[in-house]
Image (cartoon, rainbow, N blue to C red; front, side, top):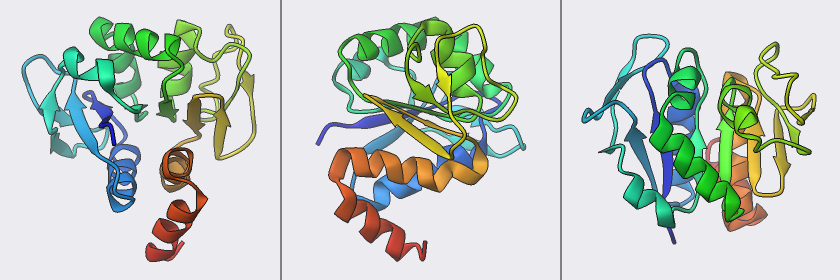
Length: 183
């Protein structure tokens, strides 16, 4: 199984990042956290929790990635959007129709301006909708359209992660993980 990468930028939403990594690892998926902070594996979340990422940004690893995953949070999503090596990697992944997932502010702040949500059903944190994009903003916890999964916000983190598990390993594995978590 290929490795998936979840990106950490200062100001990330802690529950969205850590719950997603936790659920994917429970499912047996290879997932690594990657800090976008220059030569620094540390990233501090929106609520003051500092996390040591598995890796510092290494775009060479992303060419063969399974999922590219973006937690939300502010200014985390804005910091992800401002990271040119990351946005270049996202565009290349999108062009191959390889899986991308974003939650909270990231669908609107990162994916929409890159044109990745044009003509797709998507969700984001309420009030963060980018009305200048071609997304069809849905009223749901999670939206899955093609190779892109989006999540609404912190309360959707587990559902978001389970949607990634379902898309990768199927319903049975997702149900097994959810049952083990008493969901």
